[in-house]
Amino acid sequence: MAARSQPEEARDLVSILSARDLAFDYPPAIRAVRDADLDLDVGELLCVLGPNGAGKTTLLKLLAGILEPQAGQVAIDDRPLDDLDRRERARHIAIVPQSLAYVPDVTVRHFVLGGRYGHLGAWRRCMANDYEIVAGAEAATGIADLTDRSLRSLSGGQLQRVLISRALAQEARVLLVDEPTSSLDPEHQLQVFELLVGFARQGSAVLVVTHDLNLSSQFATAIGLIQDGRVVARGTPDEVLRPEVLSPVYGERLRYGSWPGPHGEERPFVVPWSG
Image 1 (tube, rainbow, N blue to C red):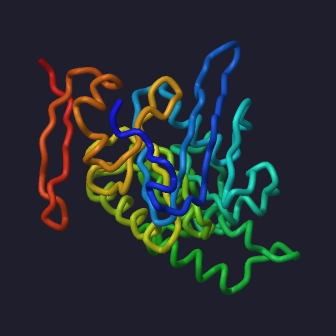
Image 2 (image 1 turned 30 degrees about the vertical axis):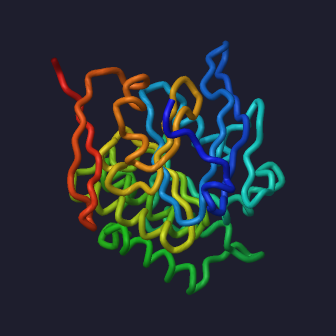
């Protein structure tokens, strides 16, 4: 298949997070990820695409250390993730889940402050600097007017922005995001991706699991394509969003075109098509 990952020397980029030969099965014998290799580079916004059940969210959880790989290894700055304790991981990796399994009855401000965990001193108390960073994250995600609200009173879209705000407050070098726009209207979808692009441009790295091929085309510096738990393609949007790459994964019921990008360049777009 086209658009395979190039060797690191050829790509001439500096990886922050890397995974080699990852494998993970759910019981009784459901193979979710197999032989997965992935690099996340400084300044990169990598969108991970694939059909339902392909292993995208499982891969994200393996990269974050939420799940332990049954084979292979995840490393950050060439240091095995297993060597980092919980607070060290929090300083390096922030994760934005698609949703919360349990929504606590706490204020938005209290919840976002939790993102500062990895930076707190011996007394585990937030200082003035922590509050300033949290306020900045809240302003950036448009939730400054929600700080005194309970999480349980929020809409799905508002809660999604709170989750992103907490991750930004964490000031980690790597941001792993699971379907951040699934509950958002078009304007907030654009705002979220613009925020993620800005985060990457500051010298960090962002991985976004998404089903949205066209937001990926517009904002991603690279796209990874997953099928049956394997990373089967990696490249620029132009390299991946092509019939010869996507059809073996998504089938034939797609139509392809192009639209002008922000700097006048052509960007691919892909839409599902009946008939």
